[in-house]
Length: 184
Length: 162
Image (cartoon, rainbow over all chains, first blue to last red; front, top):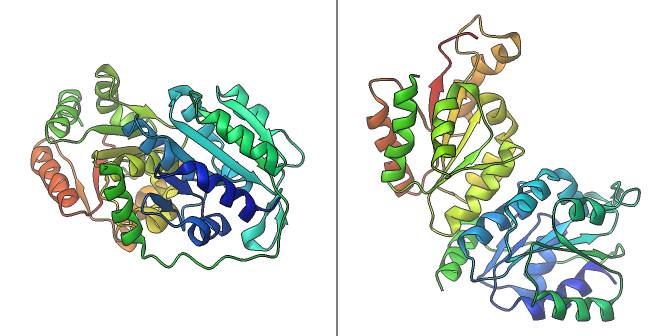
């Protein structure tokens, strides 16, 4: 499974709930496949998708918040797992698309193949799920929609030559669309 | 800054509809932070950038937020300020403890203390220094900035040694 396939599947489960996507190819894939007002496309500030998601989750307890994170991104902000795990937002679903690489910068390796990200998440109070196939992804998504979070869904994906277009919305437009969607 | 004024600043900002206080502790700001703790209105993060991320999420949810940090943490945060706060124009109030303001502060604070005013200017983050006398006026200024959808910084100088 490549990231685009996984993003496409998850899109069906997100609905109009807020989604915060990590910078690089992650945001580009979400934009190309499932552009919505409720998507916050992070285009800079690497590592912070989970923190922005936490802020939105704490202030919008009736919505389920989906964070689309990458392995390179979460490694840059492992501290956010500690903060999220200590505050335990029930409505946060933290998805990490793990291809063991910094694909957006040319495919250089990350160290996630050498360690267990899910064990780190488990130690910080997340409910953890690890998925490698599309069939499993469908069934897990149905399951986690009914569970209290914080939930950590690690999706093992393969690298790919497929490239999505850049996010064409202006940052201020992204901001205003998200603010508007959160008011609903 | 004196203890009672630091405590008053928390209540003053809260009254002016700053709802969230998020950051990394700093001894220059310790009474302010203690007042946030006493009122159970604080999130202490592992790093300053994380605090800015959480505050951004809350601000997008129309809940005004302040991020507190030492200036060492401000140095950590520059990329986040340029590529998130300034880029998306997220109206946050920063409260920064100015270590290295005194030229005989501990050595690790001297360089950042010296370049902090220039750094703030270079990244385009408007700032004001809070004193015992002017803090109310400067807090009002910060509130006005975020009403105009602009981020800004309030700075408290480290005037003592320990």
